[in-house]
Image (tube, rainbow, N blue to C red; front, side, top):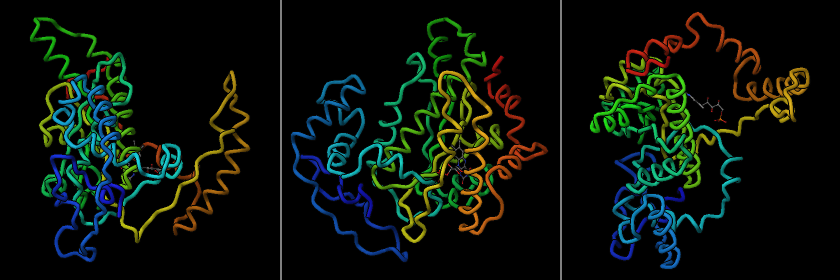
Length: 329
Ligand SMILES: Cc1cc2nc3c(=O)[nH]c(=O)nc-3n(C[C@H](O)[C@H](O)[C@H](O)COP(=O)(O)O)c2cc1C
């Protein structure tokens, strides 16, 4: 049971249990989920409403309309025993999910977390497309590397670099924004989208959900943009599969490089990296062996970046972006 099930979202005016927290269909996991009553915490709910109201710049009365069910989820999540650091250090990508839909509160909560990320000059140059339709998921999976977990995902979020919105708004004022064609603006939009997506990852994991990114949305960005009907000036950055992790495949925390390889004090020192990387290589060869995979980290990195199609079409990103209205001069 994930945290979001343990604390079904109920508000003083909304006491019926959320039907989608029950398992879907007759699956191996289709047994009734026992809900604990959401604790009565009017004080905490009021605080959460104030937080949501501040995020969207509305009165507390309008918090639930601005971001439905988010305040109740935030209030319930306050009882979870894990700190933000716990959640971050325990991160692992999840590629096996239970065939269960997500509670309706999940999407607005993840989007509220995403919108809480910093954004370059407050330009908010991103959008997100939420996909749950199995037929569309299948088409997106086909366009992005045919990964099984995309096809059966309860939710796929496609994070989009979006200068279309500001261009439209400028045009309505009779203005133009030629700087939206610069590489700097494209980079800012990609950064904004990535920061938003990662906030959503931490939020999802804090609720006991699992996620995995999908870089494959950049394999064929023009076809994907057409599938999602993105306007000119919008391009897919990364996908994010979200679901209830299959407890039968918990996955392991994947070790990262030693800090000595990535952290430099005052100035960059390339030579100091070699020894810690060698130690990491030994650790990762063992990690991959335990996963039934051959080779170490360096060989994988080199293979991935060897060129000659190793990026599965993403080597053409520059021209694809130009075709999508992000010339990135
Ligand atoms: C931008 C980005 C794109 C990714 N694309 C994929 C993907 O297409 N398929 C996949 O299975 N994992 C993908 N991942 C997940 C990485 O493989 C994973 O984060 C990495 O191996 C480290 O493992 P961990 O997340 O379990 O710590 C992606 C991660 C990032 C940050």
